[in-house]
Length: 329
Ligand code: G3I
Image (cartoon, rainbow, N blue to C red; front, side):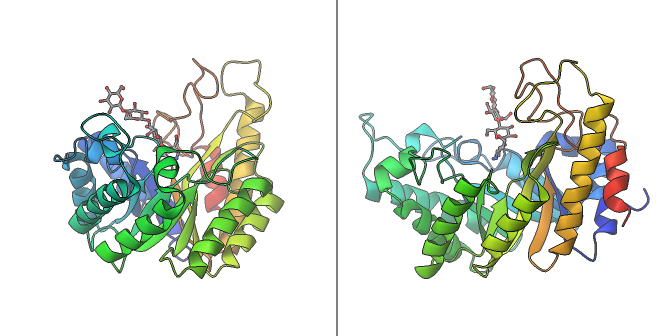
């Protein structure tokens, strides 16, 4: 199967990819994954609702399949995600009468969830996205006004990290978010992490999701975010990398993937990986979100009915020119 992306980066950091259990059932995809990647993230199987659909029921099948495949093949696994406002099961927040539960009840349920999930994979999942996307995108708000926040205030964040650390003291615990380079959000994420660290909360690293586009971020913004977070003495990973072919502000007239978009995407990937390599002592992993242009969460986003082509491999799992740009150094 020849040299793959992970081999080009073996002196820098692991190269990961988000997968579903279905990917692992196809032999061509399995061979492709093992050629290019040495770390896996479950795209959905380890989220709160899929893995813990009812208060007294877990569904371990998807997570077990991914962890089993990784362990069998010597791949690392990043756990995603223990506490999030999205795909959190309704039962977590309400009592039998349908009323919102108290802060203590919710924190006890969160603790049980985290101990059960982290405990099951202790020693096999080296890093967890403990809290995902808790900082608000709205200028007027510091933290997102989720049910977690409405019921617990900001304490749910510190507690989630403490529970995860209790369950697996060796796991590297991440705070994970998107748009982390945007100066306003960057400074809020920094403020949150600084406060947690000052309170001796076991947060060891920050995940920059990296859902970027051909027009953002600039190298300058990426560098300033890396430097700012690194100044807290924490490590950084790019946890959900893709480069949308649509710029954030304008939709191309043509429905398909134009030559101009291709060129811009190649340039953007080249800049990103050049920057990652320069910060190899701080960046401890780069994970792509979704496997190839065959299917991306960005298909139909931002425009319904429009495919996106955000990854390094095309719909036939073949390397695009951007792949050769990021492996030629
Ligand atoms: O599995 C159910 C299925 O049983 C049901 O029939 C179907 C229709 O309702 O929904 C299926 O669940 C969907 C799930 O993907 C699995 O396909 C959810 O509706 C859908 O919302 C979910 O979307 C995921 C999204 O997170 C929300 O969890 C995307 O696949 C996933 O790529 C996306 O990933 C997130 C990261 O976790 C966090 N960072 C942002 C990133 C992109 O949004």
